[in-house]
Length: 372
Image 1: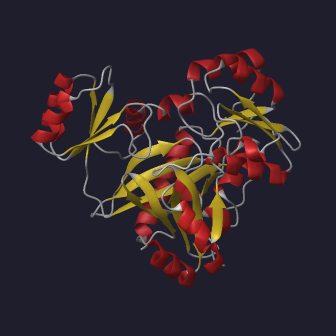
Image 2: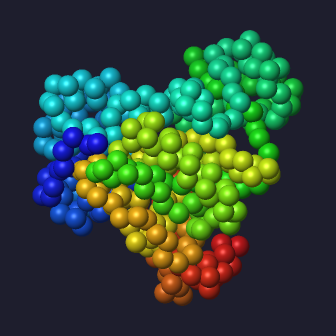
């Protein structure tokens, strides 16, 4: 059980100022909390809607200490936080970090993550550690084709990933082997759907699960998320069982995003964990009685969380740099859109700039037509 409840108007310090931090901040402030941000980008998305922002790098120990001293607790919006710096600051200042550093240790390293899942009897893909060209050859012989090579840490939305589907792919990888690469080779599996679920625990350590979403990706970037995922009740129960076990084993506070593959035989495999709110859960803002972001705030502050329920079928469509102007111009034609612009200053083609959520079957049909 979380040690103590932090009530408004306490200050929540968020490490990271992107769109996840922005939506956490908006939820926190709606409850009455003050919010501070640490991010190197001036007027970051989260900084725009918070009480103050410290403009510095995430690993800047002096800046993180300042944030800790101004805050009653700290949370993070991404997994690539400098764990050593955070641990030192926590020890020195005594600031609460309800998510904990251990969660970062597990989720910021793909090998640690896979080993954690295996140790606790949770289903995941076959994998092998790869630290050299020679180890890649051995791993390919062990796992076979097709496979995917990923950096052990960092990398997102397709960055730091290479398809290994043939001997030619192996040869190409060996010829351009990045210096000091530490990677993991994962066996690709046959799957019928990519699904995900957000999970948290409340002030009494009761597990709370949001509706399961079905996800579609383009170029390794999430494109669409739909809830409720069209899956059998037996799969729903399997997800609830495995993810609830995971939340308890990891002593979860805050929201954890769990990405999974649904196999043709109806079994699930856990693909990746995100130790914070997740892109596929954005539809919970309008689609559920409580959003993943409010759930995150309530969990880290030791507050109760009502059982998340889906109000109507919901579809979320990410907006990348290529999409933003078109979506803005079409706002006049779509009163059914819940439109989110993250306020990022620089528009880049494959950068997440915002999203659209719609509710109900008719609005979902319209958004799918617009998407084409």
